[in-house]
Amino acid sequence: MTDKQSSTEPAAPKLPEMNLEKRLRDIYSDKTLTTAEFMALRDDADRLFTQLIEQLPGIGYIGLFQQMADVTVQAMQLGMLDVKRAKPTADVKALLKQSYAFQVAYIKASLDRFTQTL
Image (tube, rainbow, N blue to C red):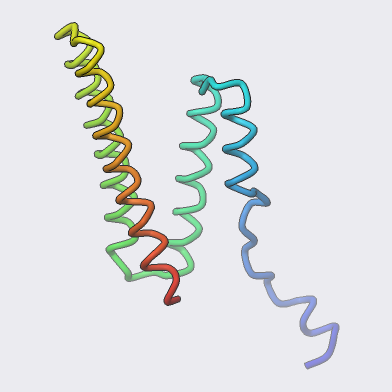
């Protein structure tokens, strides 16, 4: 194939130039997550999943995971609102934070474990 031919072929879609670790360091550098930062992270996650689904059509579990992530975040938010309304003690608040953090760590560990064999 000549250079001229390859330049007329559509380029493979590129992932947004993002470094998640750097992004999270920047977001949490002031120990606060703003609504704008949260929404931008959510939008970028959706954008990346849209690209992934386009690259791997027919693998329904990818789209299902994205939907379940949204459901998980919504359940987390609603659970937290219920807890706030219950006016928990400091001990219960600490247990809540630790419990949710362990669940999220479990999801992250699953990601690490499953992707190490790709």
